[in-house]
Length: 264
Length: 66
Image 1: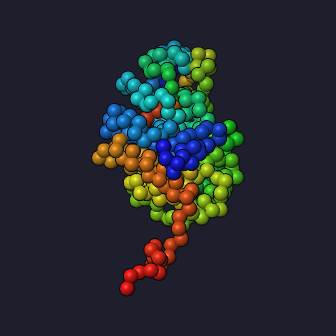
Image 2: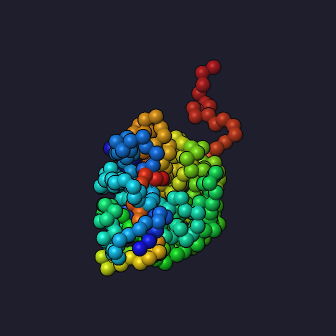
Image 3: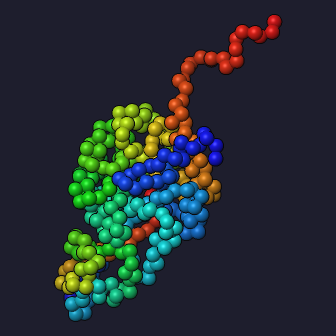
């Protein structure tokens, strides 16, 4: 291993006592097959994956989806599909009972077309869940004030969106993420939703995110395992670039070669 | 006795416990969770929880998601 990559691989992502070497968290939805999901998960190097809580079908025998996951993976249940704080809290409690984990990706949706979060309901649910001992990772709009409120409520990490869920548009408001990083230097910030390709993930990390959570960008790629590898590398590259500290942008050229000694 | 399981009305014979209901429904007991009238029932309490008329039961498991 070269010395250049050593710092990024040594430092870990810590979420309430859970330490991860990988800064990539990925989903388990939308894959064409369980085998394709498994190969993408393996390629990504991710150590934590999200799952959704749904009613068991009563009319047919249902196999356990979880059996298709690498048992070494930390499972992060989400509250996707919930439109109120109350339903999100109920879903989180059910997930904890079934999985025996305090981790929860809190998601309270406000609108079906955009899947934008209902920040008010998210905050209400976060306060309840933190009191009940959950490690709450809330998906929310990329807004500094909301971030502060969620942290004050005791959330272990905050997960601002880059763009609408499943849109693949990439980071739509880099300034907001940069402001959040600068104003909340101690917060764990995981960009969640909207990444489309590797450069989007790299940009999120270059802006100072501690990690990126994605699903569709990998699952809907023509070759999910290859895209998972690309995301892994992009997140490492973006992290290193952030730690390295980028050069300032200039409007005009600045010669790299000496101006003196040019032959005449 | 009529109960509602995952939103569906079901007629049950006798007064089964939650544990017996899971067996009757032929559901795998591992990594599912049950809510009875909007409160989670711990796995250790399934056997001792006897269903009553008009109970509303949610039984969940996990699926792929982001």
